[in-house]
Length: 239
Image (cartoon, rainbow, N blue to C red; front, top):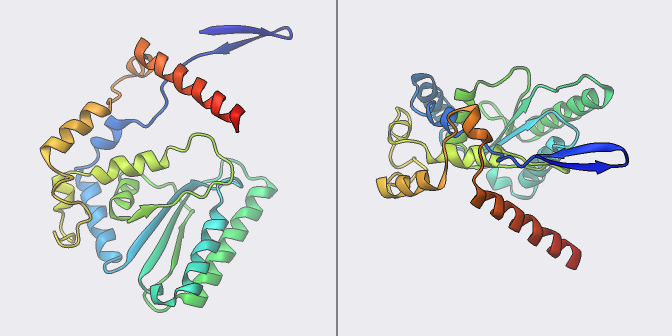
């Protein structure tokens, strides 16, 4: 810990690694529930390109802006109607204030307008999932079948959703070979699933196995963090 005295207050600073729980994600890749959900989603969106958004229902996450961008895409490029779907997973709001309620109404209104304008029987351009919490296995399945993950936050801290998406896209051979996803449709090349690449990937990522290990940070990483922070401050001042 580093303690600083600031106008009569003691401010404590602690350096901690921040990231996703690799072990918790990886252990769910080959669960029957994950494979079943991936197969169902693959069949449901067969022949269509899936764009994915995973955000809290928060005024700073830009969910409505994402819907407007989707609407503009379909307006300017009619050829994509029926071929692309935006699935937005909106985690339940942490509060129930007026601003959150207005945000929900705005988002739902945009979804209804887009689907009425560009949707047809068997096709909804925008799918908003907001009434329930999505289990991790189902979220991994959406990551697996989505062509890309879209983040449109207007103000944010450290957003770990892209990190989750990249890790889940590594997938496993068993998940790639699930029923409903043929080799031709699989978005993972054989090179991505090669043992050499997986070996190098594991060397670059550290699996968190306990709370104690998560709290540990090596002297080398501390120096890297300090160096990165110093460079950032210098660059910001120069600009």
